[in-house]
Length: 251
Ligand code: 13P
Image (cartoon, rainbow, N blue to C red; front, side, top):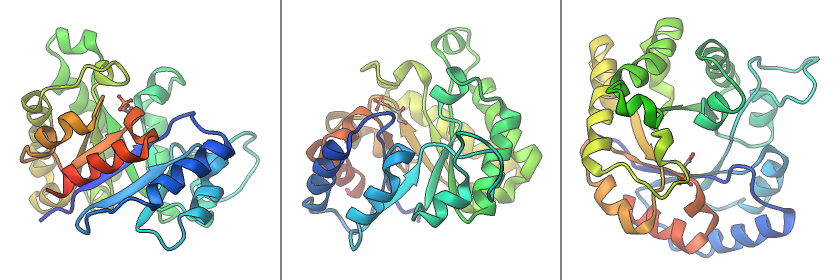
């Protein structure tokens, strides 16, 4: 049985004051026991969030890491080693905003994924198609290539200690959610691709859906057989809404 997970990606939001307020709201939530919960603040606030969530059953992750672990001359970057040292458990790799806006390629993301695991972090590999690609009927091809790049480079065994998030780019921050059936179709294809390499790995890996998830649509999405939880953007900035999404995953 896969344990559901709900992750909140705060993106480039939050000041010290608003982060403290959000954490207070999260700490007051009555969370179901069977769901893994993690929040992903901007790296600037990671230490603050780790300190404030001490003793809570909420893990902390980072939104990005450098393509090399350890320490070194890499101005402006934060390494997976440093993030682990600061108390992070997870790191997002390949969010579409980084693929598209920052131009991160599969090659760079393979190295980030590897660096994350080398430092003991659990990478959450984000994959998904643009609207143009969906309309051209290329969704499964695009997602298959993004996933295949890691499998080819690092082997399917890399997913024993990783999570995958399917986030259709057209559904991110747009209010347009993939229907439960659309999301399930892609999740099933992701699992099938992993199963071709190793059925045990395929069966064990958690597949999160992301893209305009709210309390109002979470129950239906999380009810699909291959959707093991969600990666939440905007709605994770509101503790009550995020709490309702977590409870939906616990049902
Ligand atoms: P929204 O939930 O705001 O659509 O963002 C999804 C996302 O990108 C999470 O990583």
